[in-house]
Every structure is written in C-alpha cells, then in structure tokens.
Amino acid sequence: MKRVPVRDILWLFVITRLLLVMVTYVGYILLTAQKYSSNPVDIGGILTSWNHWDAANYVRIAQFGYQTPFDVAFFPLFPLLIKVIASVSGNRDYLLIGTIISNGALLGTLFMLYQLAVDVGGEEIAQRTLLYLCIFPTAFFFFAPYNESLFLFLTASAFLALRRQRWWLAGLLGLLASLTRSAGVLLMLPYIVELWMTRESIIASRQNILLRILPVLLIPVGTALYALYCWHISGNPFDFASVQSHWGRHVTWPWLGIWYSLTEIFWFQPFGSFNEVHNVIDLSATLAFIALAIVGRNKLRASYSIWLGVLLFYILISPSIANVDTLASNQRFVLELFPAFITLAMLGIKHPRLHQALLIVFPALLATLSILFIMNRWMV
Image (cartoon, rainbow, N blue to C red):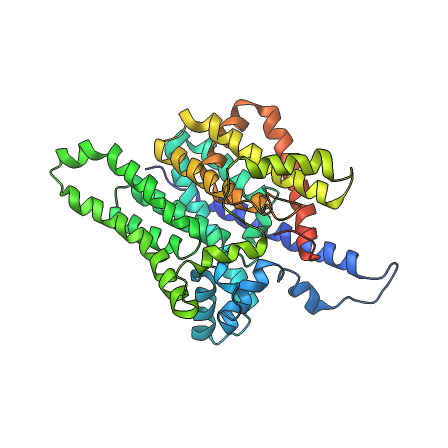
C-alpha cells in the first residue's frame, strides 16, 4: 500500500476552499452592491448566500424535521447528522454545521479516492483524479450543505473496504450510503462483483464464504429503514420515489431525456436563452460521462465500471421530462461517478493538451456556476 500524500491532499483541499470563499466574497458583493457605492452590503447575506435550493431544504429538515409531503425526497442521513451535531455542540447554526459536514466529507473522500486511484494507475493518476474532482465545474456542491460529498465519501469508502476485503465494513458503509441517497442501494452490485472476483482467494484460504455474502444484505437496510419511516408518516413506503413527480421526474427509457434535451436546444429554445444554456450544461455533463464510462470500461476494475454504468443508468431513467431541462441536476449527479474521474485522469496524462484545457475551462466554469448558485439562480 502506497503512502497517502497527506500534505498534498490538504493543500488541494484548502486552496480550493479558499478559492470558493473568494468567489463568494467578490461575486456576492459586486453583484448586490450599488454601482460606485462605498456602502457595505449585508454581511449576513454573504454568510447565507450558500443556503439555496436543496441546501435550504436540508438545513430546514435538520432544524424542523420532515414537514411537507415533498420533504421525503431528501434522504435522512445528512440532515440527521446536522441535527445531532447541533444538539451535541449546542451550536444552532444549522447552515454552518451543514457546510462543515459537507466539506469535511469531501476531505475524507479525497483520502479514500486517492487510494482507489493509486490501485488503478499509480500516484500521478491519483493526483490528477483528485485535482479534476476539486476543480470540476459543479464541485461547488461539495462546498454547499448538500449530501453529494457525504454520499461520495461513503461510496468511495465502501469500495476501498471491498478492495481490502473488509466485507462487513463495506456492508455497513453501504447501509449508510443508502440512507444518504436512493442510489446507495445499488452498491449491492459492485459488492457482489468484488466477491465473485476474489472467490478463489477466499476458497483457498478456507474462509467461510457465507460470512462474506451476508454483509451485502446490510446495504438495502438503509433504504428499508427509510421506507419504513415513509410508511409511518404517509402510509406509502415508497413515498420518497413517488414524490419525484413533483419535480417532473418520471421513470422512462434512458435515451428519452437526452432526446428531449437535444430538441430543446436545437428546436424549441431560441438561441441565447437561459433555458438553452442550462440544457447545454446538463447535456454536456451527461454525454461526457457516458463517453468516459465507455472509454474506461476496459481500463478500470470491473466493479468500478459496473458502478459507473448502473449509476448512469439510474440517472438516465428518471429525467425531468415535464420540465424544459429534462436532464436537470445531471451536472450535479455526475459528481458521484468517481470512476469516471479516474478515467479522465488517465486521459489527461496521455493527452497533455487536454489537461491544459481542463485547467483553464474547469476553474472558469466553477467560478461562474458558483456565482450563479450564491445569487440564487437556477443551479440545482
């Protein structure tokens, strides 16, 4: 096992956090203050500028619990952690605590993901993987109190536990992941694949194969517990899925969302419209990660490729077909596809000009989209 470069990871984490703080300070003030004014803006507004969209929902649920019928769309582990820490610490600043948890989970993810990427291709690929993840155009969701970084931390940790053949730990982490996002239950598939790939060593060492199979049953327990809670409050154990129609999401063919997005861009939306650009962002992220899944299918471990494939499929079969942006939030969902970032790192090393282009395009888009978020524009 290679030594984890703690100092390098900490520097990457700190620098990217400071850059987002700077973007918040400069962007919020320049876009809210009057022209040529010497009067300060509302300082409280700067501090709460990240409390928008789903962040506001998680913070509210942590503070007051599930209140509306649509709140059950937000899985419970992240707001529960906010609530517990607020209760234990006596600090009732739920927004601050949620932000700390989100950023802390990102830091943990970087350490887990480094070890996974090193196993795939060595130190340089691992370093590039972390860099691309931190400067990705929508990586600001790791800064805001969203559950993306917590889910990524739990799934990456589960994969590392599988690689180390720590089956019970992997099952427990999978349980927590399925309490964080609905897609967490899909970790059962890579678990089974990893178990199959290591079956010969397990048999050769005369280990009890049943004790290696049983932990996979822990993974859906998280979803089952939440379904039980939904049944208790609404009478429908699958309420967390059925309420997705509130946001126009419906289960359909995986290519339909892409087709609708293309028709919006090239047919229905006038050139230069807000909806056109939003469709372009979500469609570009979707197609890019589909391409990375295809390119990396023979470069990555089978369980990584399967995880990438099932997550993409899960995202594609539930587009927001009732909205003008049918692929809404895909630019955020792709953050969870950590094997694709490993593949992107491989490509960046093989093609230096691609790496140089990413170092320019990614931070520029990250700053732009971060400002849109803190100004409460449509970035979900």
